[in-house]
Amino acid sequence: MATQTAAAPGAAGSASDKPKEKKSQEEIYAEFQQLRNQQRNLVNNLNTIEMDLKEHKTVIDTLKTVESSRKCFRLIGGVLVEQTVEVVLPQLEQNKTQLEKLVEEGKDQITKKGMEINKFKDENNINVRGQEPAQTATSEEKENVSEEKSGNWNVLVGDL
View: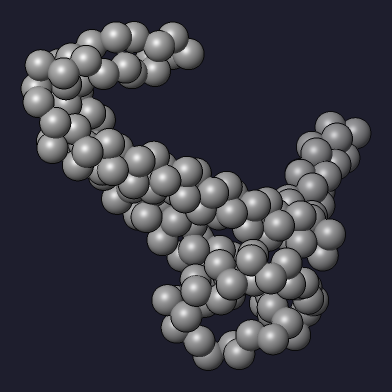
């Protein structure tokens, strides 16, 4: 009996390993959609940061044309604070530098996520409707963005 019990866990262990390796189409589709949603969120965050960067540049350019002793108001954490241009301008320029770094990091993250999506697509034989299989990564990333804007992001999942 001891040999039967020893064989049973080994058999159960190998049987449970196979389902983990072989994902169902629904699981593959869900994981692919999750990756796409993560990429979309990264793009949305990047767009928000880029808009903040543009606003900072506009304000900095405007403040450079006025006297440094002039009063200005700055919204900090929902509170309007009165300061002078000479105090605010260096802070805004520092924030602008940080935003520029965030934009670069965001672009890198989007690129990495796109590569991860492409790898997942290749591993699981995923075909996106309207997409040629032999496209380059940069073309695919551009198409991903255009699909997001058009709302056309249907995916076919299956064994080929």
